[in-house]
Length: 132
Image (cartoon, rainbow, N blue to C red; front, side, top):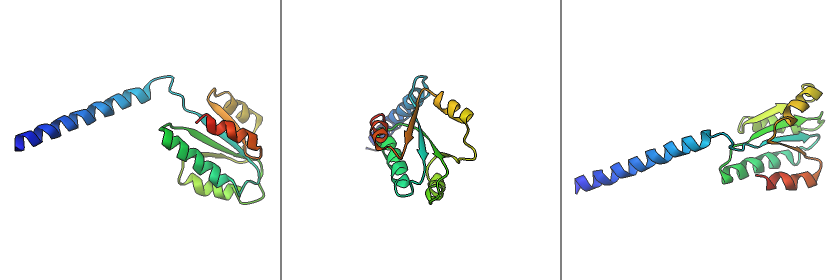
């Protein structure tokens, strides 16, 4: 009985090792699409937390990693404070208006996986969530 139990545990451990090895190989392959969301905000304190939490929730559900950059265009409300609080929980790149320049925009838009979403325009949000 003990030998049978050890046999079952050994097969289970070997199966786990093979699955982890295959997952590691698969995730390192070139061509794995990793979307880069660039969220441009301005006075979006009522919506920003929901947007960020939704993006990360759907990426976890689909099992895809993503990059999120928040660009604040000089908000006068608590948008930036909310983003900084969420940056402690989620992997966010935060860029304020003082750091934002035309060169930075060209660099971010040069990424073929970049999806730019202006949070003031609701039509853009529909296409952003469809690409997840």
